[in-house]
Length: 249
Image (tube, rainbow, N blue to C red; front, side):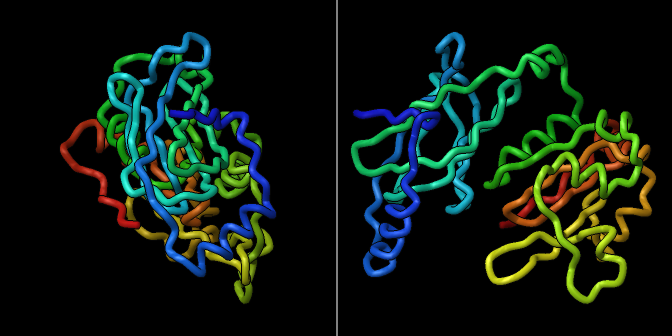
């Protein structure tokens, strides 16, 4: 079997667009996509890494040998996101077809490796949730709020997210909070959740939250969703048996 290293995959935009037009006129062939995730430095298998394909809303985990398998996978060019604690997240586009496989080397993240310790219940629950979200998740951790000079939570979020935000049409003050992101055909409102509850005031309401009360945020760009967790909520997760609400995509 031929393996394709996603670090060196070159995607031709014009070819991808042509393939999309052809695919719209006929059924896209499917096959079983297999692959392997290894440590880039040691070549050792990376166990329990999650491989996500956001456009298909699918994900799988590697086994004890670092291997993974997607059944009924459509041929074409897809964004692939690979995540595992202790490694830098990999996000790249890859073109696959029958007979191809993926060989994915992950680069260790020394900062996270230095922080390896017994994880709390809240950390385990949030990690499990992030892994099961079929899109890339950008986590903004406690240090971003503790060390912030500008204490506006929306500013801290935008700086960490590192992408373009715009004001939502027809909303007073949106030029300050910038609660939308641009998408094809217009703009999309960012859905904001605080401790599992929807903040219908969105980014404008988030601005009123004390930054010191925030433990962390999970930003899911593909879903235009921001989930905010307070220190009080994290403490409840650690010291009770409450569970996180299942997310449906």
